[in-house]
Every structure is written in structure tokens, then in C-alpha cells.
Length: 435
Image (cartoon, rainbow, N blue to C red; front, side, top):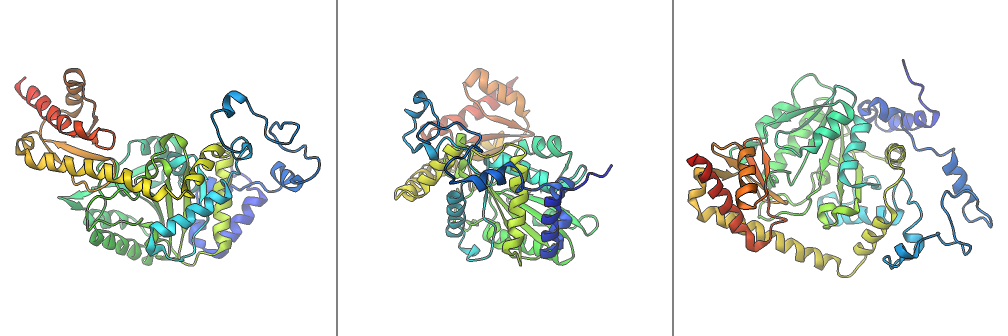
């Protein structure tokens, strides 16, 4: 049975189709049907804004017109009530969206003044990825991604949208597997293809070198020129956390945003890891495509905000205010550099410990790692889950067991305990080898 498309959704589809037919072709059925309601309660409330009596707002106000609030809560929030308690717009707080777009250009010089959308605020990255599944994946469609990926992708894309994860082998020795990526993206007939890239990678902590990224971009361009309609999702959760020279330091979005009219680049990022604010749940979705116009981007923003409104209504106002205030602080940049230095010190120490202890290679070797929060140790022979439990029960040490490897988070391990962490893993392997 065909579902009738709301006239507001149809208008957005017509705008997208006029501006770029490839994007319209890539939208899922839900993506085509979604819209941001501008002729309903929201519109009526907007028309009443500023009137002497406004009985449209779905919140409670004090008699002085400020948001009603509990003292037991507000005593802990030294902010103006209007920046805390009312609903934020479904698109996100306008000032925050504009600030994040400005920061994207500052952090990605290659982006320059390329036309991109105004970011839509999400409830952090998981929510952003889920919204992209809603917008671009129908049941049974594939999403191309590396074979070493964040486990939550399964819940988001498989359980959430009945999509199929279609992995390629991430590594060729110590390098990004360009051959496997090229073969995967060119596999099957020319048509719609959704690709998910994640640098720095979770779980490995790997980001491509400058040369590898240049080749990845060339592969994308060739695929688009061949007639494929590409949606490239960039999970940039760990953006900026790069610890070695020669590693690509910008987002792929900077170059993909105007690479080809057949390639829609989508940057999914946020303050979670970049700004050490995991529980704030503030993320962003930003679109870029060659030839992108204000009308096209506005239509995509409307659809994204519509999907968001029908899911969570809006992201937390308080978190958005706190993020915006931080970004506007004179101390923000300095504080970020201080925290990055701590993570870089831990990363370098882990590498140094592994290098000076040749004995570790009997049981595990590190996978390539140059960025992010994590490092993976590939096990020579031991079962990762058995080893994980042995570490818990006998060494008071917790790690994450993956297939054939352990993931260790140097991000959350105090610097002075890193050497003990690796030695405990080695000794646990020795224990199991004697059994």
C-alpha cells in the first residue's frame, strides 16, 4: 500500500529534485515522506510570538513571564531562565548552529567558503547517525563501512532500519586498505550507495595518512563520475584528536563537500568527545554537495528537523546553552589544547611501552593507531573473552573484548597506570598459556 505524501513533504521533494535529482534518488521512502510542519501548532505559535497575550506556548510561565522553575533545580544553574527551561527549536539553537558552522570552517581550512548547510542540532552522534538511517536507508539497503567499526552501528542501522552492513577490510598491513575500499565501492551495479567513514576510527584509533586520504577522495570522485549516487556519512566523533605527523587533520567533509554533484557529504559530529562533554548529548548534522544552493540545504535541513521533531522533538536547551557559552569563552581554545596534550602524552607512552617490551609480541601486537581514544591489541592465540574475564577476576583490570583482539582506552586510563595495564595483559596471557 502506497502512503500518501504530505503536500509539505512533496514541496521539499520538488525543491530537492530541481536542485539536485541525485539527492532525491538517495532519500529513503521515509526521507521522501518527512517534512518539518510549518502549517500547524508550531506556525500558530510563531505567529503569536511577541503578542501581549500568548496562550499558545506549551510550557508554564511565572506571572512575570519568565519560565516556571523549581528553586531546587535553578539554584544549581547560574544561567538566565530563558536559556535553560524553554524548548529549544527542533533545528537547534540558532546561535549555536551558526557558531558551529563558523568553527567547522576554522577547524577545516580546506572547507574555505564552500556553501554548506547550517548544522542541525541532534541529541549527540548516535541520534545523528540514526536520523541519517531514517533519511537515506530503506529495508535491505547496504551501508559500506570498514570491518572494524563501533558495535552500536548494528543497533542503529540493522535493528533500527533493517539495513545491511557491508564491510571492507580496513587494514592492509599497517596501512588503510585502499584496494579493498576501491573494490567495495565499485562492487555491484552503478546506482545509490551509502558509505560510512569514521576517522579517527573506533575501535582502532586509526586515521588515514595525507596520502591515503588523497587516494580515498580520488576513489570517491571516480565512483561519482561513473554515475553512482553517493551518500557519504562521516562519523567524526573523535575529530581533532590526532597525535602523529603526516596524518590527515581535517575532516573528509572539507574536500567531499564540493567534490561532485553525485556525492552528498554528511558530517555527523558534536561536543561529546571533541569537547569532553559526553553526557551533554549535543551533536550536529551538516550537509555539503557540489553546486549546493541555499534552497537545497534549507530543504534538507527541514527534512532533518522534521525527522528529529517526530523522534525527540528537540535537543536539550541547557546543554546547547552551555556549549555555546564555552565556544564564546576566551579560554576555550587554550583549555582544549591542555586536554589534547594529556591524551597525546598517554598515547605516546603506550607506544613507548609497547616498543620497549618485545616480549609482548608473543601474545599480542598493536593494530595501527595514531589518533582518538583507543588502541587495539591483536591477540596471537588467546580467546579475547576468556582473557578479558581473566583480567577482571585476577588482575582487577577491565578491557573490551572484540573478535581476536582487545580494545584498550588510554583516554580513560590514568597516565601512571598505563604501564601496569599492558603488563597485566601480558601476565594474564602468560597465565592462560600455562593452563
